[in-house]
Length: 195
Length: 132
Image (cartoon, rainbow over all chains, first blue to last red; front, side, top):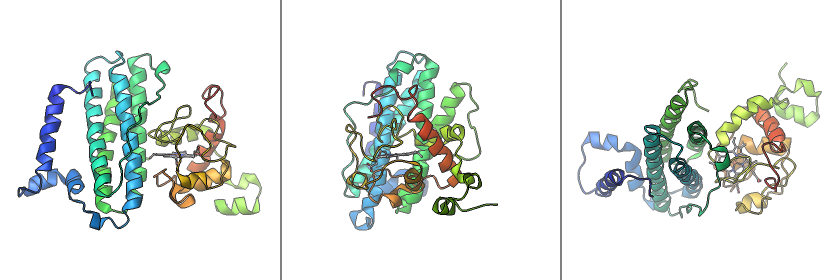
């Protein structure tokens, strides 16, 4: 997408080729630990997919929400309302959502499912987005919802390793939410628990 | 005195005893934030928009692609059906696309439902055309 800086896509490409090489090399324990959130995605085999149908539905629901978030950040980033450094944050967060979407779609395929396609058109309340704060509030609302959505996915995923991956994404989106709240001048971390 | 929510519904005890049945829409608005990755009142997201929800049959929006499971569930959304669905969507409607564990706390559900009842028919939040 146009908002991805060339630099960011190079990094992503490099990371992806590194990940696809995974298995050809013996990785150090540290490297494996670092990849813990994602290596599972590369390793799942269909034989393991006992109750994959249920997990596919859950991952596809998460994927659809990620695609929506990518589109929402696109609206925000191209609105002309965001100033640096907030604009850079939005672009970076959108990049994370793209990585989440790629990881989820790959996993759905590995489980023998069909990843949901991104919609051709998303409808956002653009008429209500008039200032930088409006855009940030909207993004924060989506990130907060995403945290809850993953929290609602983790207990019902059959595969514990997939639950771990979902938790890893939840952590990232909770950080986005906190940073957006901080940028809005709100207490960044409103409570000890998320719900 | 604490009476299980199900008992309240079942025997229709005086409503004031049924704490969980008295929802606080203001608190419900906070709980509704949990739904916003997939829903909004006015616009379809990856889940259907909620304007007009209360009193409408399940899976009724013409411009949203629902699961077969929800389409054939034969539900109409009211306080009772929503309570059951939101507690555990996948159990209430096996095969639903709403892959979410649910809102387990009965009081939180009552608050959420009170909010939905109000907001989904509030013309300020749900302008003409967003309810069908």
